[in-house]
Length: 242
Image 1 (cartoon, rainbow, N blue to C red):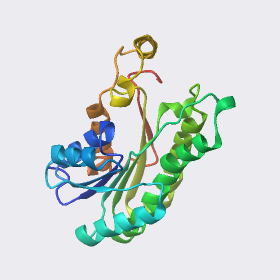
Image 2: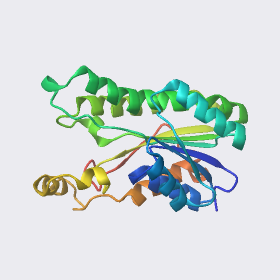
Image 3: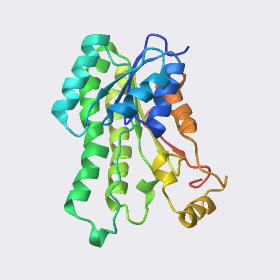
Image 4: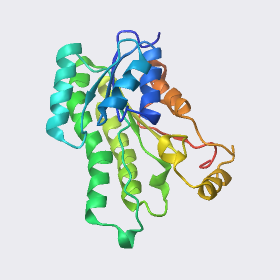
C-alpha cells in the first residue's frame, strides 16, 4: 500500500479514466475524493473505489465552487497530497463552423479548470514540501481535425505542466501529464464502427487503450516511485506517437 496516509483528489472521476484512476489510487492505499458534476455516477464510482473514498459535486471551471470544495476537503483531511486533473469536455467542430461558446466551454473546463484546482492545492504542497500533480492532456495537442479548441486546451495543459513543474520542484513537488490517444470509454463507444476501424488502423497495437492502463501510469506519477520525474508528458498511445 504505497500511498498509505496520502490524500488524493481526482477530478472528472464519475466514469471512464477518472473513475479508474480513483480506484487505482484507493487500491494503492490513498484516501480518494472524487469530483465531477454527476452525483449519481460519482456515488457509484466512489463505492467502487472503496478504501473510504467519497465524492463531491464540483464544476472545476467555477473558481468559487473549486475553492469551496477544496476548502472543505482540506478542513476535513488536513491536506491534499495528490491532485489528478482529469476533468475535460469536447465540443468538436470544424474551425470555420466553431462558435465562440464551443471554444470558451472547452478552454474553461480543460485548461482553466486545472489552473483553479492547482491554485487550491499548490500553496499547501509548497508549505509541506510534498505534492504530486498529474494532469491529463491528449495526443490531440499534436493535431486533430475538428478539435482546434480541444487541441489548444490540451496543448496548454502540457505547457502549464512544464512551467509549474519548474516552479515547485524546489519544494519536493512534482507535476507531470499524460497524453492518451484512443481509450475504451463510454465516449468512444459511441463512435460509428467505420470510424473506429480507422482509429484502430492508426494504432500499431491494433486495439484501444483501457482506462486501467491510464490509471497505472497516473498511479506511478502519483507515487514516490516517480520522485525524480517532473515536467514530463507521457504519451500513452499504443505506439501511435513513437
